[in-house]
Image 1 (cartoon, rainbow, N blue to C red):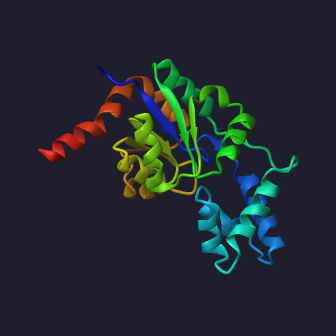
Image 2: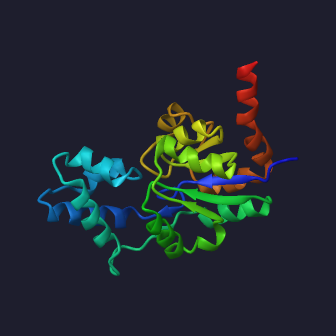
Image 3: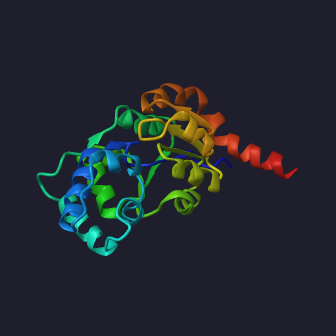
Length: 220
């Protein structure tokens, strides 16, 4: 029996554009703790867990205090809006139209994942949500849900897909270019989700079976 198609997506800078909200919350939270940073300092680290970013930009900071301050500012009513990335709704609908399920697997705090999807108008197009998983740890969710394809903008997303034996599709809508995503294990690197939407109907069977075929071949 053929398993149902399940496609996983990363959240930030893959499905939603929350970079202004994230950067604003970081700058204000770090400022409260006596550390001045710029948007340029933070941009390369978007999409990784809070504590990882803290270790990179302010290693002496109290990470727990940063998390509390960050979430306070991130949740403020006047925080910058979270918007859908171009092609996000169409990508999720495309998977549904192909008879598949959609899952979101993010490093973000789980309630914040749901809030971001709601604000971007994407919640009704997502079947399952996992938060607080990064890089290879995302494979836990991908394997549990039987995801044959995973789409993301970060090298950690490509590592997750490889660890889960999912077809790794990188989109260069974040801080990483095609070279970085390919070096991290992307089977395919695309400029955006609009391109994914265009290719999906013709290639979904190929993508969802390619990694399994490659693994079987390597074991022979």
